Image 1 (tube, rainbow, N blue to C red):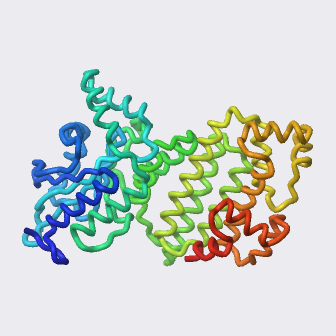
Image 2 (cartoon, rainbow, N blue to C red; image 1 turned 90 degrees about the vertical axis):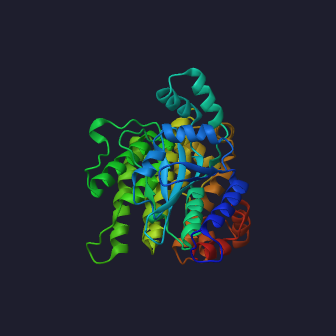
Length: 417
C-alpha cells in the first residue's frame, strides 16, 4: 500500500472519503487501474454510469494522459454530467498506481430537456435512451461550489496538501457541445491554439451566453476561462494587471447584457457596482470569485429580462428608476405621476405584476445599495441611513435585519474579513 503523510494508507483514506461524499451528496467514487479497468465503485447505478463514461469519452480523456493527473481534472460531457478525477502516483517510479473519480453530478442549471436532446444525438435506440434517462434522473444535482469542495477534498485525501481551484485541469473538447450551444467550425477550440487564443475563444462564448441569458453554459465556461487566463504581469504589479483585465471584461459583459435586452440604466448600475468591487479586491483569488459572480449577475439579469415579458414596460422602467435613484426621495404618488397613472391604479398594477408592494420594493432596493456602501466605503451607519432616507438609524437597522438576517454592523464586519 502507498503511504503519504498521515497515519493511514491512501487506499484507506480514499475508502473513508467515498463513504463521506456518498453520505453527504449520494455521490459515487470510482477506482480504475492505470489501463482503465474498474477496481470498484460506490456508485449506486454503476453499470449505467460506466457505460456513459465510456460512451461520452470522459474515461478515455482521463486515460490518454499517460503521466496521470497530479491535480484535480474536471471532466464533463454534452449531457451535463461532471466528474472530478485525479491519479494516485507511485512515489517509487512516478508511475500511475490508480485513477480515482468522484461523480457524476449535474450543475444546478442542467436542463432535463437538454439531457434528452443530447441522448438522442448519441444513442439511436429509443429503448436505450429511456434506460439511460432513468439512470440520469438519479444523478445528484449540486451547486457549483460543490465542485471546489470535493475536488479539494480529493486532492487532500491523496496528497495531504491543500489546492486552489485555479490549479485544476479542465476537459475542453473541441467537438463537444457546451451547455447546448453548438460551436461553429471557425470558433472551435483546436489543440494547436495558444493559451491566449483559447482564452479569447472562451470569453466569446461567455459573452454569447450573456447576450442570450443562457445559464446552461455558465458554470463550465467560467471554470474554463479561469483556467485559461494565465495572467502575465506587464506592469510589474500582477494584482493591478488582473484588475485591469477584469475591468475590461466587465465593460464587454455590460455591452453584451444591453444586447440581451437589459435596460441601459440597469446595466450601468451593475457595471458601476462591479467596478467598485474590482478595486477592492486584494488577491487573484478574490478577483476570480468576483469574475464568477459578475458573469452570474449579467446572465441572470438578461434571463430575468427575457422572462419578464408579462411585466409591462411601464413597471419595468419604474423598477429600473427606483434602483437607480435609491438616494432620492421616492413616493408612490411621484412614481405613479412619472408614468401617468393614478396612485391607486399604479399600486395595484405594481403589486400584481411584481408580486410585492411598491414601498417594499423601494426598501429592498435601498438595502441592496446599503450593502454595497457598507463594504465599499467608510461612511457611518447613520450617514448611510440618512442618505437612503430611512429616517432613523434604528429603523434602518430594523429593515436591514429583516431583509438580510443580520445587522448593518455585522454585515460590514463580515464583508471586511
